[in-house]
Amino acid sequence: MKRKVGIVAAAQTRFKASLHDASIGEMIWGMVEKITKETGLKFETQTEGKDSFCIDKIVSCSEDYWQGRTISDCLYHLEMGALGMSLTKVAADGAFAVYHGVINILSGKNDVVLVIAYRKESETSGSVIENAGFDPVYLRPLGLDYLAASAMQANRYMYRYKITEEQCAEVVVKNRGNAFRNPYAQDPMALKVSDVMESKILSHPIKALDCKPVSDGACVLVLASEERAMDLSTNPVWIAGIGNCYDAHNPGDRDLSDCESLRIAAQKAYDMAGITDPVREIDLAEISEAYSFQELLWMEGLGLCGRGEGGRLIREGVTRIEGELPVNPSGGVLSGNPSGVAGMVRVVEAFLQLSGQAGERQVPDPEKALAHGTCGPCGQSHCVVILTR
Image: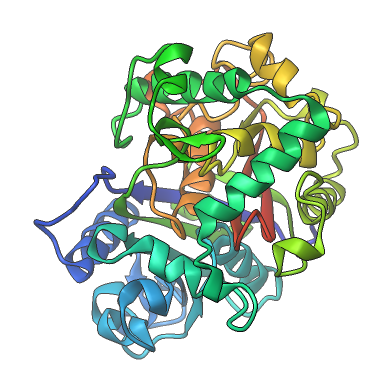
């Protein structure tokens, strides 16, 4: 990148099954207030003089269906600080919001961008909303949601590469165990593979413990140009590469065991970051895995192992927090993050790791980290962010 972009601060809520004691607006304001107090930043409309350090752009991530109304950001522009400000809304996953914030700074248009992602899954029916994401003529009447579609993907992937249900269960055991080290994680659990295997079948082969729980929460981060980043932080983390890719929307129009759009998105990010061997050069990865099998499949799409080798990595302990390539030391999405917010949480967690602020979940001395977000049925669209110290 000709112009460097850094993350100078980040914050996240403690994710819960229901944040019933706070409205969405209060949840957003709590994050914005925390980040502005930490950095001393003000919003552009509150400052005087060209030398004032201020937020000059806001990028938010939300989705009207989940909010229950159109133009949903209009309810929360005051809490976000957007009155009189430049605001862009991204209706996908929080990682894509980070992507757009980075692009704003790379373009030279902005110097300091506040990125916000928020969602309350507890206030609506996720299955009904996900059903609306399918073709209205041929697929929606079948009652499909992301769980049913992902079960089809899991079956195809497991059949093609001989991935076992037990290997998928090991992902749950690892990630829910890691969550005990993360004070923001929703549902840490001490599990055995047998506990996962014996949990209720929701849509074969996906069982209750194979999928993420209903979750409420929000997160924010501040992106800054190199000049501003060095003034705002003594320890910024740099965005070295970004990439995204959009695949065919209908699951039947692609081989669900391949995740080609993730491969393309990852390659774009690697090329920008100058990474030629991600297995050796990436020190940790935060991957969005709403279902246990997806961590294995997404690792393959990211080029962190060969196709069909995700099961081997989890079996050999490579992806454990003390392994050669820690994956989801935070506990991942399986431990509780709202969809739409999850990918941005992955970026925040990577930032905390590289800045040495990850506490008990800290990976020793990482130099490069990968953060991943996805949206759409069966990983239709992916975004990859490479971060460096």
